[in-house]
Image (cartoon, rainbow, N blue to C red):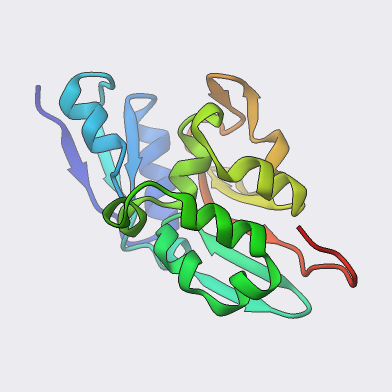
Length: 179
């Protein structure tokens, strides 16, 4: 079975590809799960869209007033090593440290962890507790969705056709808060 490979350089181009190519299109950033599933025949796809070249998906920035933004293609190792993430969001840093092996931590992304299946996401409870919001882009523009509303039911996200997770935003910690 042949799989078409695309590597767009912009959010707009990626959203257009997702809308055009349909449901048998998979996004890949790290590929720690997707490549295994495709190889084992557990997942079928006509198109794989590599999103690593999209700048918005690689953002990892902190502001004491605005909080932390983590792009969907940021690997967990970057979250582990980010000094403000560790200092202001210790439970997220702990989740990042629990990710399987060092090679997987270097490839696996927060975006994949959130969008693959809620049952296998170690990050969802911590992100809900931290009041994180998913920034989603699609044909109708961008929208924000609280992490707890990303999954409509166990096998279906609330992402519509042509939509993709761009980043996750955690608000600045409130005074005297902790996790």
